[in-house]
Length: 293
Ligand SMILES: Cc1cc2nc3c(=O)[nH]c(=O)nc-3n(C[C@H](O)[C@H](O)[C@H](O)COP(=O)(O)OP(=O)(O)OC[C@H]3O[C@@H](n4cnc5c(N)ncnc54)[C@H](O)[C@@H]3O)c2cc1C
Image (cartoon, rainbow, N blue to C red; front, side, top):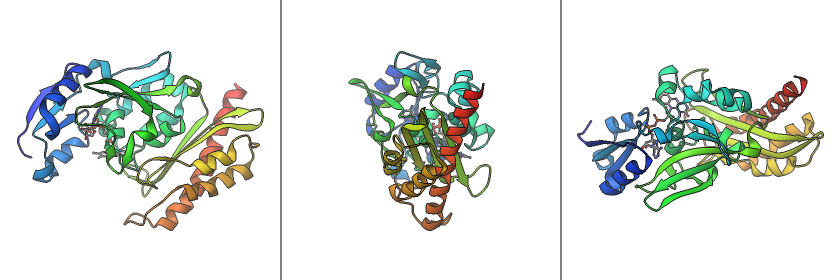
């Protein structure tokens, strides 16, 4: 590991000021589960000269309801998501997704914000937040801006963040807090494995029809994506096993899976169809369980 200057930010605006002051060769440190490996192994040309630690910035923490919806601070760890009473009650799919990330130590240190900023296509937090139409807030020298989460990623390991910007929080819009949602991850092993495919599905139940169906797909395109043709197909259709299976088939065409040493594109396509159908079934099961209470 090469030497670097280290600054600890007191809050979000302090972090932005430090980033702006130190220019392009600066990196943000949150939980460090990814960044420390990068610092150790990055080529000299990519090694930061300055690290700004945001882990003590309390305004980037916390899970609370606001007028806009459920706000999750960028520094909230995967363990905190798993332990949050409101998330467990309203959005258990986020708990399931957090639970699949690494092992206990990684979940205790790793943050939701860090997971999203890595922009790795197989990130496990992505699909559920896409299926919930989450909004992200970014802060920079010119102030704050918000955007739908799918617009935050622009390619593998690339986000819209400029060097002096940070991710502040993630907001689940009010109308989607409690929306029946289900997350599934398929890896080569149960624990400590990257997803070959991960999927989340959500929809409101309107009579017996799908309302606002959303499907987030991970590890099958350069970024986490919406399965848009599957979503359009389901809108207003009766909730039946046949329609769920058809949506699974359509989702395959929304994705661009690759061949790599973990799995072939053909195998990933099969997984997309099956997991999408099962995620839709899971969301409906959650709705029915709640109705039965
Ligand atoms: C052993 C192991 C297993 C893992 N397993 C999984 C897994 O199963 N699934 C999965 O999805 N991930 C996995 N990960 C990846 C990682 O743990 C997560 O992505 C984690 O959530 C990253 O968060 P962090 O706070 O540690 O980020 P850091 O390492 O601190 O930062 C990661 C990147 O994001 C930037 N960054 C962080 N926060 C912000 C912010 N608020 N604003 C701007 N930039 C920011 C940093 O500069 C850096 O580039 C694993 C990692 C390890 C080491």
